[in-house]
Image (cartoon, rainbow, N blue to C red):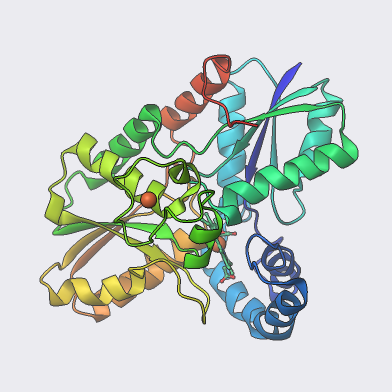
Amino acid sequence: MKGVLMVNLGSPESPTAKDVKPYLDEFLMDERVIDVPNILRNIIVRGIILQTRPKKSAEAYAKIWWDEGSPLVVISERFAKKVSTQIQMPVALGMRYGKMSIKKAMQELKDKGVDDVILVPLYPHYAMSSFETVVVKTMEVKDEFFPEMKITTLPAFYKNEDYIKVLSESIAKHLEGFEYDHILFSYHGIPERHIRKSDPTKFHCKIDGSCCQTNSVAHNTCYRHQCYDTTERVKKYLGLPEDKVSVSFQSRLPNDPWLKPYTDFEFERFPKEGKKRLAVITPAFVSDCLETLEEIAMEGKEQFQEAGGDTYKHIPCLNDDDSWVSVMAEWLNNWEKTEKLPV
Ligand SMILES: C=CC1=C(C)c2cc3[nH]c(cc4nc(cc5[nH]c(cc1n2)c(C)c5CCC(=O)O)C(CCC(=O)O)=C4C)c(C)c3C=C
Ligand SMILES: [Fe+2]
Ligand SMILES: [Fe+2]
């Protein structure tokens, strides 16, 4: 019997340094997130980052935490539940990091008689630190604990027409009545090195956009290409003027060059260029989370207004929007016809 395994990133158990520390430890010790040799990763993560970051992160989480728990987890649960009412197979939700593990979710499916799993990484774009690590981890869990299970995966849906339509229409709805000078598409950043590592041709990706018009298999795994592609498609769908839309990348750790332009630098720049009414959309995430609710909706607004900006609007992620739920249900109900990740 078929069943659906949805996987999102995960969150700490509570917004306290005590719970943030083990969560960040598991997350940042992932070799696809901090991709340096194990000994060096140990030094960077355990010797440096985890010495101070858990306290700072816990304070940030506390600002956005809901009575029901972490927004990312609660929203993912609502989404999975709504989708399950529109399809004829069991749905389980797992997280790549933290206590709501992929193993627990797979066990839940197995207990319901599922042996044919549709894996849905809840990321629109492919990155080794998001989509790829979910697929690899799920395969490891399958091989170790559920060898009899078959797994097929929904590919990154960044250019899928149904997705672009619901994303665009959600943006349009939230923009109603908001006069803006500019719309910023702010995506989660990744180190530039990750783009080169994910390029199967090893020479295509130039990280400056000059390669993106040349057809290449590299685009199937190029996070930067896919972020710009989503933006172009939404721009076209909504007929947004070229000069009123741009892309940036948020959230980075020090030392490495990360994808540019950096979102916080853009917040400083726009008011100086007369762009004083700003809307920000965060399409790397399907669910609102720390990175959108704190970094963009709170910190970003403050940075923009301190730099001379006037009105500011963070457009929510798709979350458990009914049209988005219907699109996902449609993909799953028509799984035979839905595009699958090649194995
Ligand atoms: C090397 C570090 C990181 C990479 C690479 C990275 C990629 C990446 N992350 C997401 C999605 C999310 N990240 C979130 C939080 C978060 N991310 C990093 C680091 C990297 N992410 C850190 C240290 C944190 C924690 C924040 C903090 O403590 O300061 C979240 C939010 C989680 C939540 O509970 O709300 C999401 C979602 C993607 C999609 C991605 C690659 C494209
Ligand atoms: Fe992240
Ligand atoms: Fe490219």
